[in-house]
Length: 154
Length: 266
Image 1 (cartoon, rainbow over the protein chains, first blue to last red):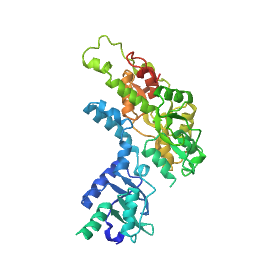
Image 2: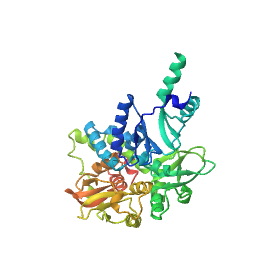
Image 3: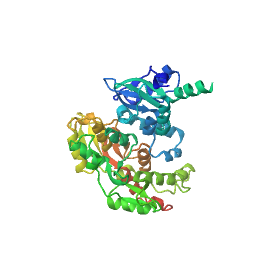
Image 4: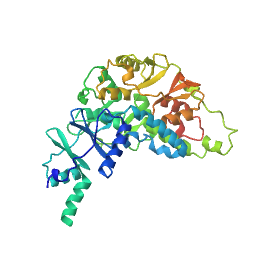
């Protein structure tokens, strides 16, 4: 019952210098490849070391208008134009600007119950698996969930 | 992880970070201006926040009126106040000048005496003409060239107490904007302060026509999360002024006799 039993070893990563537009495309490609929605991706440097994580939430947080409560005052067409104009400024933002850098990681030998504990206590849905500074996999909460409950509930 | 501090400010589009002491009590604040100053001074991005934070913190109580809060902001030349409740050692939230303007704007838009409603009803003959951007804008636009280094940009922002500078290309046309947020991003990315302005500027330059109404310009700034908008004359390539959100709000306030709230930000 270790991380190595449930981790996904085929995963996509991004680079800090990727644009947010590239990140969005990467999320789509990763979801297609994994056959499920991928909400967060690992960010690695040129030496393939983990330097951060970027989630859809991070991007939405950034593109969310500051005065969200007044948007309802606009007509639909005005809203679309205003949001399009706002997104223009996102073009200069890179993955490295928004990613979370204090990433919790586990090793292939981390026990599944310890992973459950980390995910629950820290509200984490995906955990990078790192061995000797090299990313070797990722554990998704859904894989962990089905692995544990299907195996023992039948 | 020290870089997370700048990252947090960028990601949350915050104007400042609250610094807590070892006992979890508020110790000071680090604004984008403070970070730009640290960047100018050549401090590394992992400099402890304690080294650049300022204090004491300006606060208001959770049940204070907005007028009182605005008075504190005006007298202290600040744009945010920390809000305390019954426990003076614990902050309930942050009151931002821009958020107050957003609220006023919302109240005005939904007011039954709003100009917008009267216009929609075809009853605008009796309405006085609206102020335009040219009535309020600051005609002197601080500019720098794409080839200027970031030291010069920061010096210019500091000397004129501006939040953003217009960057022009070698042909003199508007090429981009460098705000304090852009400088924080540059610091975060380890861009050297002697790099050219082009390395840190954002584009395109968002501008409005000087014949636009103040209401229109305010809406553009509020919906675009901008603290200021550049003003052009006919063509976006002909920048003739700059309008700040606070100047627009101050001018616009009091123009409606029906509303006390509209006069608050004067």
